[in-house]
Each structure stands twice: as C-alpha cells, then as structure tokens.
Image (cartoon, rainbow, N blue to C red; front, side, top):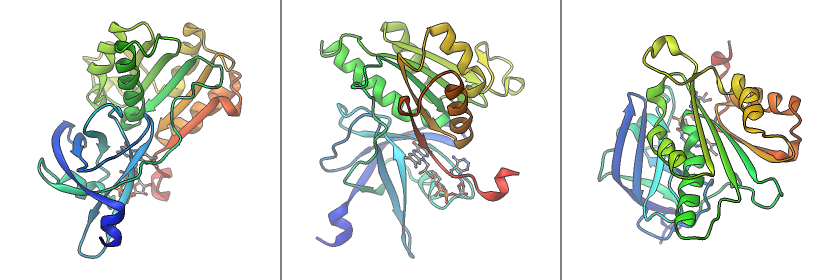
Length: 258
Ligand SMILES: Cc1cc2nc3c(=O)[nH]c(=O)nc-3n(C[C@H](O)[C@H](O)[C@H](O)COP(=O)(O)OP(=O)(O)OC[C@H]3O[C@@H](n4cnc5c(N)ncnc54)[C@H](O)[C@@H]3O)c2cc1C
C-alpha cells in the first residue's frame, strides 16, 4: 500500500442532485469504513496531472447512513470545486479516511437549546445533527431534551438545498424549529417567508424563541461575514465566548473585500 492508498479511499459518487447552477449535492460510497460524528467534516480531493488538490467539506449525512453526503458550492475561480463540479455518478474522488472537526452538538454544557446559524452550504452540519437526532428520536434514544433552532440564510430561495427536508422535520417533531430567510427578495418575488440576512434577524428570533446566552449554545457556519456579524450580535445580546462555536468556510480573497 502506498502513502496515498494508506490515507485515502477512492470514493465513488452514487447520486448527484443539482439545486441551482452553482449548488449541488453528492452522495458517495467510500468503499471502506468511515467513522464520524454529526457536525464533522471530510476531506475530498481530486488528483490532477500535477498534484492532489484537497479541501474540507462538512458532512450532510448522519453517521447512521451508509453513504456520505455533501452540499457543495461552485467557486468558479477556485482550484477544487470546478473539478468536483465535473464529476458524475460513477466517477471517483479522493476521500481521506479520517474525519475531522469539533463542530459537534454540545450536549454537556447544561444549555439545552441550540441556536444553529447557517449560510447556504453551511447548513450541512445542521442537517447531519437533525437526521441523527431524528433517528435517535424514532429509536427511543432521544427524548427531545435538546432543542434545535435553525436560521438559514441565502440570497434566494433556490439556494436552500435542504429546505423541504428541514421543514418536514420541523412539522414532525417538537424539538426542531427551522427558519429560512432570503436577503434578495426582489430577485425572488414568489418567496413568502422571512427576509433579511441571518445576522439582521438573530435578535428578533432569539427574543421570540426565548433564547439567551444562559440557556442556548450558538453555532455559526458558512460565510465569514455572517459569522463575524452574528457573533457580534450574540455578544451584545449576552452570549459569552464559551457559548458560541463557529465553522468558517473560507477567508475572502482580497479583491472580494472591496
Ligand atoms: C471545515 C470546513 C468545512 C467546509 N464545508 C464546506 C461545504 O460543506 N460545502 C462547501 O461548498 N464548502 C465547504 N467549505 C469550503 C471548501 O473547503 C472550499 O474552500 C471551497 O469549496 C472552495 O474550494 P476551491 O478549491 O474551489 O477554491 P479555492 O481555490 O480554495 O479558493 C479560491 C478563492 O475563492 C474564495 N472562496 C472559497 N470559497 C468561497 C465561497 N464559498 N464563496 C466565495 N468565495 C470563496 C477563497 O477565499 C479564495 O480566495 C468548508 C471549509 C471548511 C474550512
């Protein structure tokens, strides 16, 4: 076994769904044992003639599922996503055998509410939490003692890859609340739901849901601006550092900061 085979599986894509022109999900069969906790990420890669290009991707699926699922955004100027975008069902990709990350649900702090804030693909770990708890709930291993409150933001509604699934869960169980919001309603006139950026509406919903820095842990995932502004908002509302955790997906390129 060479070094690459030692560390990587050649995972095969078993399903692909395109949600919009630059957002899609894939499910893969890793071909070997892959252990992870809901909220962790996997490292996906493509071998080019010159090098192996790898990036981390949060896992959408639950550890109970046989295949591993991802929700990916195409970054046209990026190194890896244009290569991933070309892959079809049946194609292979490199997949590190070890999952990483600490963005897991904190059930030890004593805070039993969990405020989950996401932008677009940042919903991935929260879908994994939800699917995992739903299975535990159905199997009688989880009694609803932890409550999830998800606020998901996107520019337009067709960027919510898991909207229908999360709405269905929220209607089915008492421990999940799901609130999608769009920031460009003028481009999506049929949208009837909440509008505004995630960080603009945090206060409105924490007040409505009775969440405080004492009873709720906050998790912020996705776009760096939402995370920075969201944390500022939460700090001013009384959340201490140890009650907030984050998964920042990228550092903006210099030219995109202007
Ligand atoms: C822990 C973790 C989990 C992640 N999970 C996911 C996930 O579930 N789904 C997912 O799509 N991505 C996820 N990412 C981001 C992912 O790892 C890559 O950074 C992203 O796919 C871009 O890769 P790339 O090689 O195409 O672009 P790169 O070559 O890495 O980046 C090119 C430029 O684009 C900028 N950039 C990168 N991503 C974006 C973006 N989304 N929007 C705008 N500019 C960007 C970078 O700052 C850089 O300047 C995650 C990142 C981390 C750290």
